[in-house]
Image: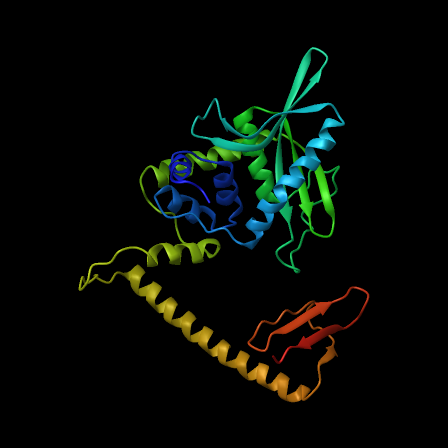
Length: 303
């Protein structure tokens, strides 16, 4: 949980997390970033974040031990860094390290990440081989933002990936990515943050936008004049609501039919039409698909 002082500091700077969210569209995307700059509360910590915080200590120590074998030494942990060319760009480096080679020295930051521990269905395929530059886009943006602030030419990413264990990547600096980060920062800050204007609402940020506007104060009995844009938004909302309610009814009908047709049976095997089907209803259907089989096992929990 960030302190009030940390929140104010984050609102006045553009952080590595801001760049990653704004460019990747994850965790509320651009809308969430700008709304938090304008005073909205940050997103609450979820289960994945809690697991990441718990594993960060042992993961960091593992990475430090691995790098020490190659001559690297720790300069500091949770080190603040600011870009010399764009002072508003800031980052907090998990671990800052130095490697003294003869009369010269190399510097690099270490970013700590965990993946796949909060859900059995998380796809971790975007974590490639450790000898590659294949890491998730969100993390790639984060570490390049950090390199913009530190001036480093490469960095390390220590990742604890569910099902694969602990991995250590060396990511080389790509100036095209750095330029894109600066361009996005300048555009967003000048056109939204500085003008105190929120960006358009998209699919990536629908939940955050809804939560933000629901918390805005209203004036009793204050009538709003309709506009074409407002009328279109109301029509779309009513259409989506009617479709959703219709789908929910069909979902309940289908769930009831499944239970009726299964009788007292505990599970059945059916051929999947389109890969793995994951069904979430009040009867708690669970689907597990095994590569070595040609069928899908569906378990129905009637409890």
